[in-house]
Length: 328
Image (tube, one colour):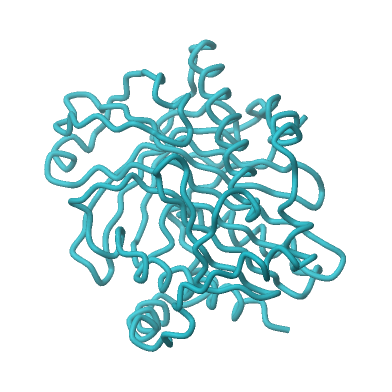
């Protein structure tokens, strides 16, 4: 049984608490021009990765084991509202809705673990070595991006986990600023959030509703997982229906959300996250970080959301920021 008990924190507070905002914007622009073609060669490295014991041990698990380990999530009941923005969140008083949300996040955790396994399905690799693998795969026609990074210092585990508590914008590791507001709280670590996205170097302004949970499977394994639910806020102007092709139980979720952002939502783009998550695992001589992300392929989104090379560059730059933050 997986027991969720880590408190959730606004992911509007960015990873940039660890690295400066100016550095990120400057270096991202530079990195998009400076990454060599040999890094983005799309070389098929499945044979290499399969022989990589450390990566294989990190990701290998059977489908049955996945189902067994992620089918009984027990969220922690609320003890306080200390992590909620005052006046901007509401406890869910509907037990049926709480049960539905818990089941959705059960499936989200299952899918996160499934696609954190690099031996599941084909991989179109951009990078593959003992410390880093970055690739794209598919789930029934839906593209998924993912990377695996090894930090060669197991003592950094708690610090890495703390960093991702602070930075909860895991749904898009690109040049976006994310502001979040909890609109419904089910448990202290399981909430619905309204996210507002603004591009730093691209002309983009969007929003999404996501279910977000933190999971501590053991003392050495922590997971963060998010998935969108396609609900319309009160008088929401955007009536486009989206289908979550990865966390399918999210498609049957239905609830009313009243939002103060109605006027703004008429003018901005709805961003739909099929699945986004991180698994952080402490091993004897390193900390493994696995990232999985899939955003609904809306052709009206900016090119940086849809172009593989640009997404790979954004991920690679983010990886470099993580590595630089935890140098010896």
